[in-house]
Image (cartoon, rainbow, N blue to C red; front, side, top):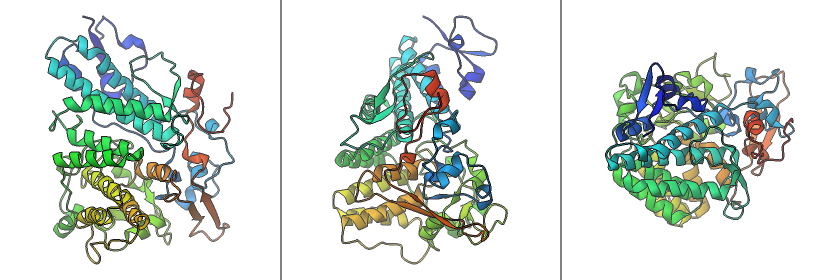
Length: 474
């Protein structure tokens, strides 16, 4: 058989740049990949990063320090923060770390899927390696399509421009862009083909478990508004792992200053993926939350009280009612891009709410809140309407699923439904009195919600076209 040789640097950094990495000559310091077990090992990839810089300040949960906006030449952060639709963003986005990394990960999964069957060894290990790679390939396509395209809308998904599907390893490929519906069909096919072969307890935490796979399946169904299927998948995921980390008890123990909770000890975590890397929360000042979100937390929520800094005069504008994550990752591990059990509970609550099972929806929320709220009103009352119940679910998602992609994706998908669409208003600056204060508005149908493909990708692949009405500078 033809052996696969991957240099150690490529394995660790995913810096695959040419077909020359795949030869029959073993380069110095190379790894020889020729058994099913070695292909399975390739799935395990600590430190997967998915930068959020393309859209970070479009979210109503994020904020910028005033000195980083006032008097500065507008960059993509400032354009997003001020909801400026007058600029064609493509010329400012010559490249994208997120785009490059997501497709590089997909190339890794495609390498495994394409070549593992030709390896010599246990057929069950081959099936497992392929299934694990498929579930991760589906996940990366999910992040990409919700980044660069409209949210899934049953009425328009069949014609809405999506992304390029990469279903095989080919560094020279120039694939045509698929529709949003086609991308979701591809994602769901990968999930369904992978599920029968995945394990409840994989080799290590960087391999996808059944709890993660069913959680992801639930998320895809939810985004498509396939509510019954989303509920069934969420329940299946919780049958494998339904643990919630008890922050109320943790607070009583002294919190992160007394008891350290590294990644391996956070029982909620279903997958380890990050905005930048496993130590990203050491730099929490990069993730300032908005006055709106801080107010939403209130004064008795462990998710805020345990982990956020509100007093820094260096990283915060005092008097702005903002805050930032102030806890080192070694003291408490918080997953951002990866999934966790509490997201599954929240998806289940949303399914109940959408199905007019309001009591059941609030019961699920209260199960979570019992581990989060330190005093005062722990158990929410059941509202009279579905819309009010959904508002409770959405607010709890904002407080529980911080940073990463969750709020941005939620805004996009909920904006396709008039009942839940939100017009975001942002008053800025709050503290500086020498600059005119303005109100900036982001409409639910704004083109800003669709991130343009980076210029580097558009110039390389002429079949790739923008999903917005912006102009390319060539």
